[in-house]
Length: 98
Image (cartoon, rainbow, N blue to C red):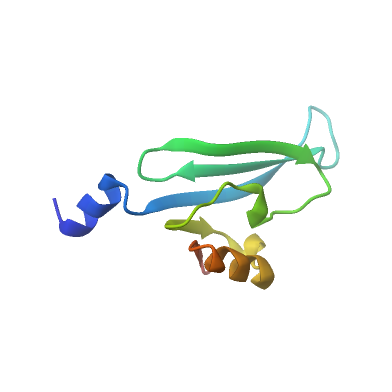
C-alpha cells in the first residue's frame, strides 16, 4: 500500500462527499423537500443526513465538517463566503468541474 493511501486509511484526512437532492412525493408536480447528505468516502459511512423543506438551498453549514476534512462538492456549493469560512476552520473544499 502506498504512503498516500495509508494516510487516508489511518485517518489523517477525512474525505467527505457532500450533496443535496430534491425529493418529491408520489404524484407531486414540484419539489416537496430537500435531502442533504455527507458521506465519509473512505469508510463509506454516513456523516450527516438532514431533510428540510424545499426552500433552503445547498449550504456547507449543514454539515459537521472539522479541521482536516476535504469536502468534495458540486457546483451548487459555489458560495465564496462559506468556502472562506470553512477554510479558516481548516476544511479544504474541492469543487468538481465540468
